[in-house]
Image (cartoon, rainbow, N blue to C red; front, top):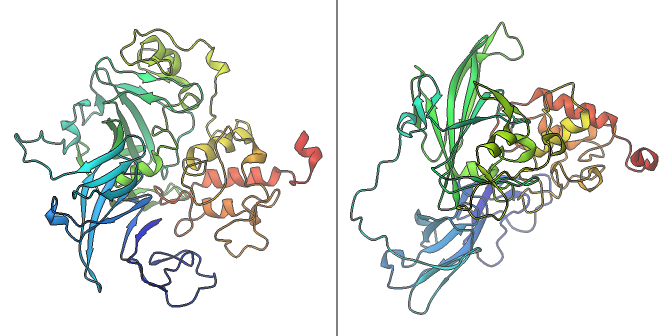
Length: 472
């Protein structure tokens, strides 16, 4: 959950993996020699995901940065500077937010400070020139975004398309409404099995509501994902008490407490803490490994949707409107129908909450949507498991595997112990909130349906060495 920067001195012990920076990680592991030295600076995954070490700048082209250690984040593209007098930090500040996957820094003999982007090579960091004209104001209210014809009625502007998904991400029991806004002549690159690729300028809209009274849902947050300069950026808007508009949440995110119907006893009321994600937190889930967009993929979109005046399969509707184009086709190419297969032959998730659906399909959909964002190849998850729905069960690296991390005082723990939920650490993590919870971000409440679903699945799994059952 943390990224660190250290001023390295000979013989010091920085604590990994007993500690992660200044925070406990494996406190029961044996500590190496010497006391743990805290980091010089650290960033929570709410603002950084994978720090790339940099250089101490010594040059005259950027005199304000002389003596500054400059470093960045591979995932968010943000760059910071920090100065240290040998005893303490004297200055620490974000310098620039870039669209880059930062893999390194260097300095030329002439004093230029260079940043290395994985996709496009070397870029020079220069002072920002004085603005020749004021920048257009950023929409601080939802009513200023142009996405709604009436915010108070939650009625979208003409051309904004409603959509729904087969397997919703668990969001602390919130109801969700989803919309897609495309610039004029923009479209979406369609993929049958991978995440779709919307064009530049696309905005995805998702509004979250909590049940404030039995049968009464109040809007809490509207979250936007905007594709700008090839990069997805997230923004959260917090709805006012009157339900007439929503205000932009600061980039660091926020928390608020709401009065809701108690899910355990609907005759009672309880309080619920709602987390508004930081801008960087949005990109933890909407990551490169996951394809940035989570709902816009065939397995999620392959379903009927009620558009008000008619009901149709979303794949057929979007294709009919000329929004989809084949993979690799240019954005300005003439639009033609791209989906030739019948919808029932294409990949389709089931709803994990649908008790009538096959158990295995429900579990695989839940794990894919809620967990595989990180737990896949190059996903950044601090474990070796692969929970993508297309990964065969025997290659998921969870069945009868010993956990690499916390064991929760379980005797002979396994990630998934076939037939034994009490020995299955995956279940322990899904069933708790706090240190060690999964998913680690974005939720404050346990999903009770998911816990029972996973228990039932684990109970029915055959032992790993039961070759007869496995072949069947």
